[in-house]
Image 1: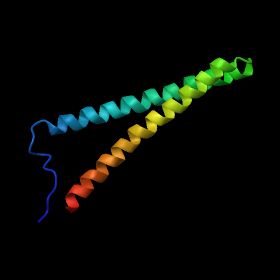
Image 2 (image 1 turned 90 degrees about the horizontal axis):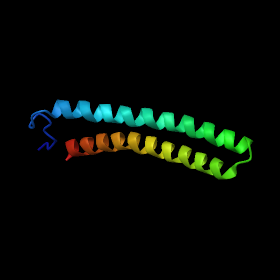
Image 3 (image 1 turned 90 degrees about the vertical axis):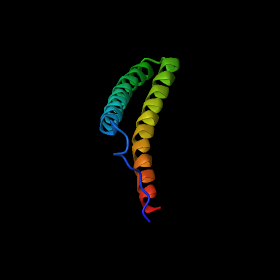
Length: 88
């Protein structure tokens, strides 16, 4: 017996997929912009000897990379769960 999620059982599931896709795109665009801005701040501050601001720029880069990884990993995890559900 194959048990898998019935995505057609709920009305508007296609709209939900579009909303989630748009939110993922928004998160990834913001993360890339945050990496660029934080890297510039990190470089300028380190070149001028302002190590407190350079540390904050480095933290911004790491947070942006983590957000992008979590957003991309969330999609991979959800696809894995859907495939796992189809195998049950």
